[in-house]
Amino acid sequence: MKKFKFAVLIVLAFCAAGVFAQVENRDVPYTKVLFKLIEGYFNHEIDSRKKAETLYVEAIESCPESYDEYMRETHLSRCDYYFGMYIMETYDLTQLEHALDDTSKEFVDPVEQNRRIKAEATKYFDSSIEHAKIAMNLRGENSPDAMTIYTQALSANCTARTVGYVLANGLKIAQYAKKALKVDPKNATACFSSAAQSVYAPGIFGNATKGRKKMLEFIADETLVKEKFDHFNFTCAVAYTYYRQNKFEEAKVWYKKCQDIFPENYAIKDLISKCDAKLNK
Image (tube, rainbow, N blue to C red; front, side, top):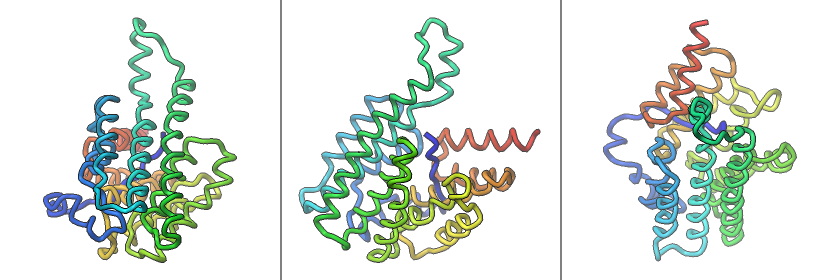
């Protein structure tokens, strides 16, 4: 659940141009329908499971006939990953609070509910990983977008699975991100995956100062091929490094920048509230 990955304040011209302006520079371009699923997830515009499933199926079916097998497998990997991420976000603690107040509804233990959600989400993350593996096997080292979505799905699975899974697979995230960057050094999503451990890993496994430095470098690098969610991811990562260092005023500033990208993201709204609560103590 605690998968808040976001990015920087973006000029209005970017929004006017749309998120599709850069896809032609990608190893595997995103389809417009897949972007609709992605933006719906990040901006919390998907208000029902039925709508999410419809977007997911439409995204799968949007795969162009011109795509070869490698591109198709990468596309399917992305679809599974983002639908899995949507499922993970359905565990909304505010809904649990309402359930506690409304005794007319059956109470669902939060631990059990979370367990069920994670179990379902990991099915899609596993499928995303398998599609990415097939794609990587088809092209070997020359598969940057497949390697990148592989790192994203691995990262998501590390959030949803056991510590044993994290120990066995966690290091692969940065390893494959760096492999992708050798082939496609301007891939912003791979850049994020290459440095995410420093930002988000707990305790001695993370390094907030180092992670922030890298994310700020990515933000400043105008040569990177960045999608809207890349900007969002970078910015939220910077905010989180401040948050974990108890620098709540700086964290709030950066979380506010996240809202300029996806204003309806309730995770960001919640984090801003948490910063306010810390600052008002």
